[in-house]
Length: 228
Image 1 (cartoon, rainbow, N blue to C red):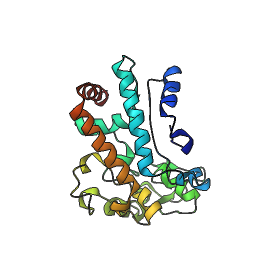
Image 2: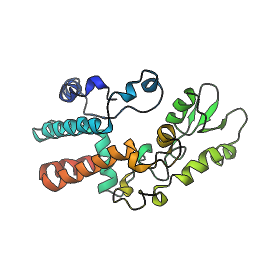
Image 3: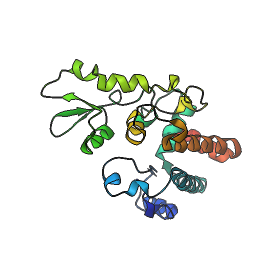
């Protein structure tokens, strides 16, 4: 479920609708700086902090449902908890370092162009071909996966050697996100102190750790989610 400005004050009603329709979980996600969200200027409708409040309110309500016997998961939380609490990696592109672009999967466009991710394809539709890796008609497998368009962002954005990421306690749970940072800040690394991705991610990580520290029931629920 992609959060619009109109969703911000209605997270409980949205969750109740999902539950009422028989869904067993949902993914609370912010708007991304690509495609329709940019064309309609919806991306500017709320801040990272406002989305974090929406997320926290939603997660707290989902936890309350679980405590009353209604099994319902928040899938973004589940992805993070699997990274935090198990030895498995869920392979969620946004939270991979080296970045998940092309490593987790590549995208073939209708015209045969090959992109490092779906976000890369959406960025190309906006006129930025930075993450175009080649063409099915002209390039081999080796050409695509050894292209500078892929190797440069993977190397430059590796979180273990990026300023601020390299000393961040949350680095094992986080990701590099070179496409996002290139889009909003103009380079693969980004200025982490000004990054809305970092701001959101760190707030979520802190919140989950605090919930596990302060609420034994939440911790038990989280352990179930992490091990599914």
